[in-house]
Length: 392
Image (cartoon, rainbow, N blue to C red; front, side, top):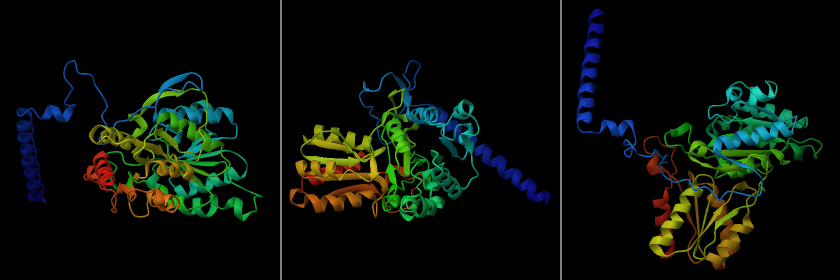
C-alpha cells in the first residue's frame, strides 16, 4: 500500500511539473494573456460582449407602452412575472430553486416582495411540477411553473400532453387548466452539451390543446410571456438562454401584451423569405445583410414567435411574393418544425415557388459539446443554402 501511495505521489508531482513547464511556454509565447482576457483587452480597450455565432440586434425602442428601462432578457422575464403577481392575487410561481431567484436569476427578489406562499420551491420532479400546476389552474388560480431547463421537460411530457392539453376537451369544458404557463430555458448556450442545449418545441407542436411560444428579445419576451399568462389555454414559453444576458434593449416598465399566433415581418424583401424563431432570428438577420452586400439579394425576414398555432397566412403571403423560402432552427432536421412549415407552404404556394424550400437546421445527432460550433446552423450554412436557392 505504501509503495502504491508513493508511486501515485511521484506521478502527481511529475504531472504538476509538466503542467508548469507548459504554462511557462504559453506565457513566454504571449498566449496565456489571451486565455485570461479578450484579445482586444488592452489598457484602454472597451470591453464588449461577443456571442459565438450571432450578434444580437435590438429592435427600435417602442413608444407605445410608456416609460422604458434598459433590460436584458432575464430582467424582462422578471419584470413580466412581477407585473403578473402584482395584478393577479391568485398568481403563483413555483419550480426548482425559484425561491432564491432561479439558476438564471429570472425570479430574483420576487419571493421577498410577494411572500413564500406565492413564490416557492418544488422537489426536483418535473412531472410533479406540471401536475401540481394543472391542479392549481383547475381551481381557477394562475399557475406559472418553471422547468429549470427545457431538456428536462420530458419527465413532464405525459402531464402536458395527456392532461393539460386535453383537460378542457375531456370534460366538455366543465373544467380546464388554461391558466397554466410553463417556462423553460431553451436552446444552445455555447457549452451546454447533451442535456442543456436542446430545442424540444417540435415535440409539443404535435399536440393540440397547448400553445408554444419562443421570443427573440427582451421586449418580445416580456410582452409574449404576459400574453401567455393571460391566455385561456395552457402555454409553454421557451426562453433562449443564450440571450438572457447577451440581449439588451429598452423594455417598458408597465405591463403590455403581444398577440400570440402572429408572426412578425422584421424586414420586407422581394427575392427570398427567411423564417426563424428565438436566437436563430438574429442569425438570419446577419444572413440577410450578407446576401444584400454580396449578392444583391433582397430578403424578407419573419420571426414566427408562436410555434403552435403558427401564423400560416403571414408566411404564405410572403412566399407568394418572393417565390423562395428558407427556414432555420437549432433543433435536428428530421421531424423539426421546419418540416411542418415546408409542407404547408408547398401545399399552399406550390405554383409560386421558384426553387425547392430549404431547411437549415441542427444535425440528426445528440447535441455535442466541443463540436457545438460545427453543429449549430450558423450564418455561413444559411448563406450557402440561400446562395444555392438563388442560383437554382
